[in-house]
Amino acid sequence: MSVKGKKVGFLGAGNMGEAMIRGLLKAGLVPAEDIFATDVRLDRLEQLGKLYGIHTLSDNALLVKRVDVVILAVKPQIIHSALKEVAPAVTPKKLFISVAAGVPTAALRADLPKGVRLIRVMPNTPALVLEGATAVAKADGLQKGDLETAEEIFGAVGKVVVLEEDALDAVTGLSGSGPAYVALMIEALADGGVKMGLDRLTAMTLAAQTVLGAAKLLIETGAHPGQLKDMVTSPGGTAIAGIAALEEGGVRRTLISAVERATLRSRELGRGNQDKKA
Image (cartoon, rainbow, N blue to C red):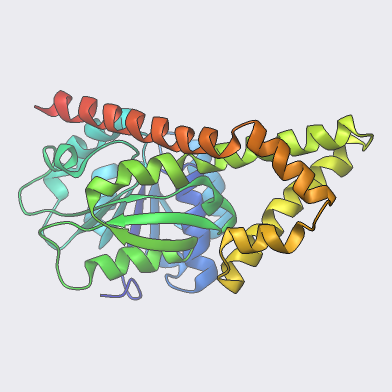
């Protein structure tokens, strides 16, 4: 099932919701007249309505009644109350897609009628500039084409992979939390440039563009990161001297540990959400 020809509703219209709205419109997948959104902030709805020409509503249950696909984009802390509010409007014809971090499918299903079609996804913040990395979790009880619909929607804001739900904690530790790691690395690179005499703006511009360019080079060539490293390093040169300093500082071990700790924290939060519904 393609999302084309379907009405899509966003339960919550924060940054991630807006990113998906913009992506759907830019990709030509869903016209503005078929996109609906709710949010607790009425000024936010007014802003989005004027900016994108979409329908805005103050009633969550009414939104669910009017659309075919519901994107659950409210904060994890309020998702259960939001689902209880819309539960009477849920029918097997509706497809629900949740972007609520750390809230397992089982916990979401507990607030909805039996037989609901529900997919959990884990996007990340670069979706705001249509360069996101999103994992779509396989699920039971779906109709043919439901997963493809989720892939199509999130493909409009970046790259998509399909995994089992138990892999989403690792996804959270890697790509979900990864933009923070990369931002820290860019800041540190820029600090190094400033220490060596560059002005702050120049250092930040060069650091950010270097990370962007290196990532694009890897993606477009399919080369292993080690190959790119070897392309830049020459015997007795500057890059290998810098690499040696990074290895001395344990940068590999530290990044691996960061992903591990974030993954374990995601599991802990997920168990907490599950326990609340037990």
